[in-house]
Length: 113
Length: 112
Image 1 (spheres, rainbow over the protein chains, first blue to last red):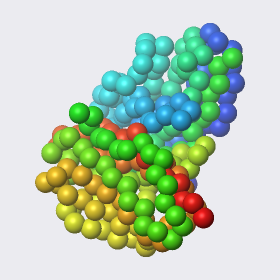
Image 2: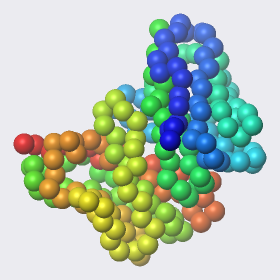
Image 3: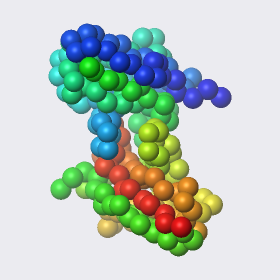
């Protein structure tokens, strides 16, 4: 079956521009996560959606970052007024519940010039 | 103490030997434990889940869980060069977990 799909796979943009990253989770997965991974570093948790509950936004690094999940399925991570330190791979994962293993997409590699 | 701790490595193991990767955690309420493998430039992929004390075997991989001592290990038998990757330990935070916590990973290198 289809796995977690992320788009675009690569994004290059100028400092100060807004970007939108998309994640389409595995069908039926109620939990959706966003992570950020800088080169050579570990996974940095950003935000977590579980069903219709309020999202856990505790990992968002600043108010320039926001995320939505519409209809309990597709999620969009938006970064406003991008900075060079936002350059990283943004990974999305989904699972059937928080205590269940996560399945990752291939990520979006974001480069801010 | 970090919630999930792993030795960053690199851990160098000769081909054909057993690679042993360890992870310790601080929350005694944790019930589920996962090992992920991440190749350079790729996203993490799940290789093992373990929920009960003891050993769980899957092919060349064995996960070992000791809740009393709060550690979980991953053994890789007959190590191959293709096993060279970073291995991440992950677990839900607490009995009323709201998210998965990942360790920073151990980089494993299998030398021919």
